[in-house]
Figure 1 (cartoon, each protein chain N blue to C red):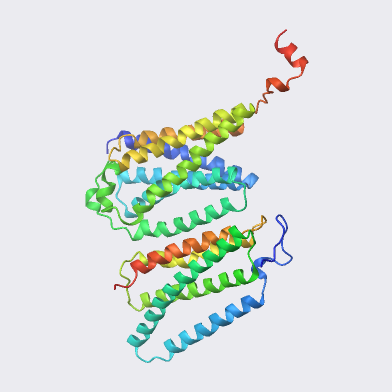
Figure 2: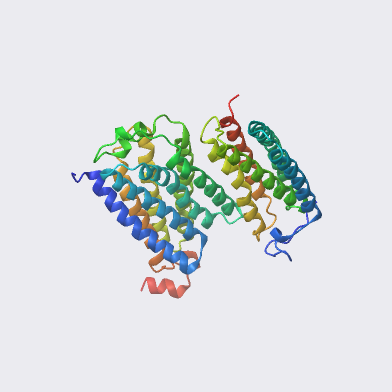
Length: 250
Length: 175
């Protein structure tokens, strides 16, 4: 089997998402914050999706094809967005209710994708790019594919919008510059796979694997910078004492 | 209209352990209905008549369930959004009772499937267990919520229930 670019990019994405998911889930285990669990689940879905891509490059499996679609096309974006929802939506139980709706849709669509979606395996071949043949394999647009644009738009709005909002908030208050930069990177990382997915729906799959890989790397970098780099408190000019001004301008 | 617990406070008895007269009434009504269904199934000699009876009950429960879900959603909007009230004991008891009926509905569908019956579209089974699962998820959120009022959970629950029932009806038995 030839090492195609999609295959290599999928392997890299799989390794990155595995490490990232492990780090986030371990942090959730230590701190028990709900947003970390939601992000951890989203990253596990990212991992399952990219792993299934790797498997499907080599071997046809209806199970991995269903898993690829369910995890990659339906679950990644909303679960990553759900983590942001827990961070930013503090009113009442709104975030918990959204999570329950997400759980319900996930539980319903999993067997639908695995067992109730007819698949035409004759369209598959070794080294196939799944983004170019998945429509042929799954048939017409009815069924589980109905949920894909809804879930992805919803999740992307939450993840990217939430990251941009947080970055703006920290920048406006002139504090925690690491979180400003981190959130920008997360927003950029969230946009890339979403844009790639949108292009696939419009018939151009060329950006998919690059967008997927660069996206998760940017999100990882953003998470790392926001949560591991020491926060440098920046005192706004109007709050500085005279001694601070002298120290700055000797 | 609502017996409210202050936001941040926990009730003396957890909500899911509270047995109220409303809950007893709801369970008695469900028990009577279940007994009637079982008698008609168990004492019917012919398998085809048994299947026809279950199919008819299944059909009527779906339509009544849709109407009740929409009614409860409307009441939830009135109590929660217009009156800014919390979930009352009768509303919670009604929710538990409706869940019991939806559980019976799912069980009837499963038994008919085991007897060889098939819906118009196979995906009806997916929507079927979605109907069964929709209320418990939001019952869990509401009964464990420390921020009150918490009627929003039931707006989600009954809204989703009504939407899923509509899809079960459209994918169910052929006209």
